[in-house]
Image (cartoon, rainbow, N blue to C red; front, top):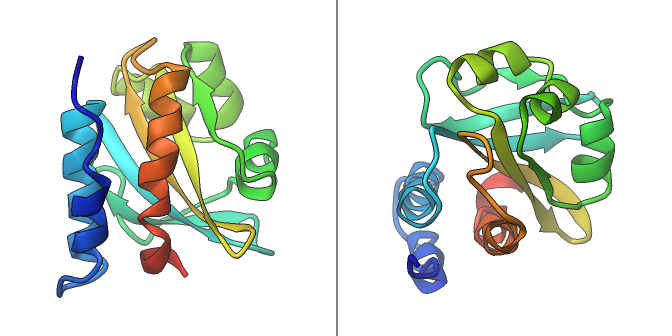
Length: 156
């Protein structure tokens, strides 16, 4: 069993210079050590546009600044509007949730754990981890949701 994420270290990263890059890297490093992933992204919710903007990515073929039309999807209703975490653990789940599902699947990722970042009662962003099928469970998602909250200052 791996150790829980050191939330104090993530909160300390918020105070360092070179933001939001420093915080994004600290979250990426913590998630890599605790949960593992093939790639990780941090998305900013852009209400009223139907889009999220990629603010950080561990994968070069998922460039920062790119828009992704997630706000008007069923996934968007759950995560962006509802502020609920979402866990997909199959090819079918990925195809259901993401317009870029084929790229995600081509990376060997059939698991996706998405934790909303909530500020003042609304979803301002999402932490998304992607890995092989059945890589994450509900207990992981609960801890990822806490980690996601440390991203709030970078996304408001």
